Amino acid sequence: MLEEDEFKKHEFLKKLGKHIARLRKSRGYSQDRLCLEAGFARGTLSRIEAGLVDPKASTLYRIGTTIGISPKRFLEP
Image (cartoon, rainbow, N blue to C red; front, side, top):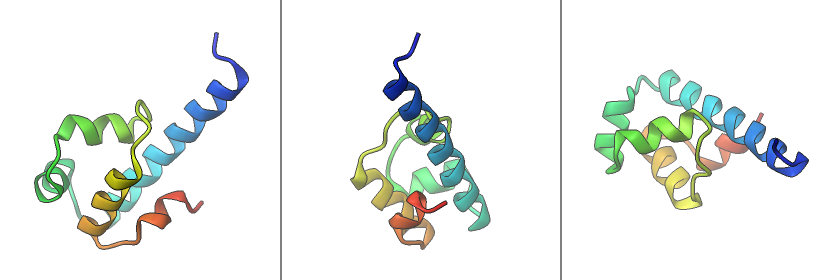
């Protein structure tokens, strides 16, 4: 069973991943295109969008700059 802090982190990462996916799609990017242009593996993006990993700030920066948005938008509701 997850501790309360771990549960909150897990829920946050799931919401963050869904938000990243929405923003990516709103800019007309597939996962494949984004990964090709940003220079990382599709599995990495897939795990981020599923909320399975905690992305580094540099990864959020690469995603954001590739799709043309400020990376801070990933943390906005």
